[in-house]
Length: 108
Image (tube, rainbow, N blue to C red; front, side):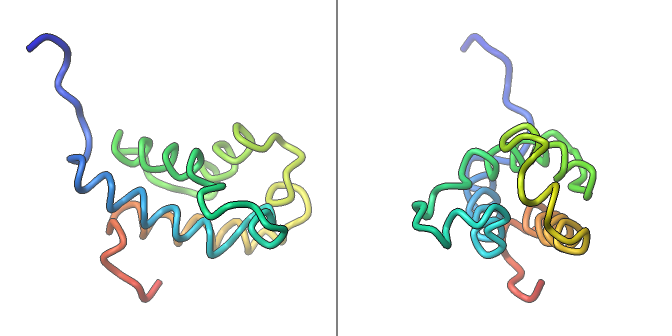
């Protein structure tokens, strides 16, 4: 077969990881979109981005969350402008756990 071998988690691990990250984003609803009727898959692009970064051995930090969020929502997003800093820090911590555990822990 031609093509490079894929680095990062296997499809199964990646699927679990993506679901875990998406669950955290949905629970936090950083932009308040789910509260106003957006579909449950609203944050899938962002969850996929975080899962890909983790698969590339990036550590999820507050700074990385802010960078990814600015990429998808702009620097004027609610999370980056009006949300308390603690919300961003808590989201980053939960995403870090979810991205590593693939959702195997529920007590974070």
